Image (cartoon, rainbow, N blue to C red):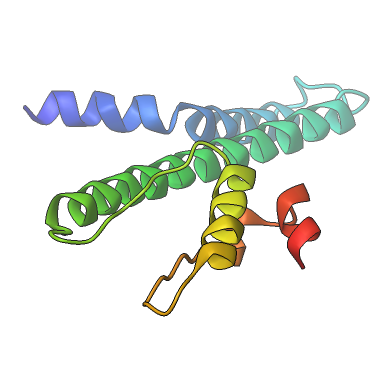
Length: 130
């Protein structure tokens, strides 16, 4: 059980681990005068690329976890929204067009269609109705 968690940690952080090992190795070889000074700038550039890559991978993992949690929340809301009509749209434009149509057809009863602006951004449908 402990070994599987260790391998999972290594798998999740392999780029960061390789970046650290490469940096330590470059410094060590440079101190021993095995690594020529002409290669040091290239080695530093490679380390910077690896560092940037590890940061991008880490951000993507965080975003994937957030998206997974949002999907769980959405499923929970849909499962517990008894008596409330909920609609999921495939695109932002489709949602905005639905909202505009419902507002134009609204009568003397409560009819609310709302979309969070942060989720839709500046789509063509939003610009059309603003």
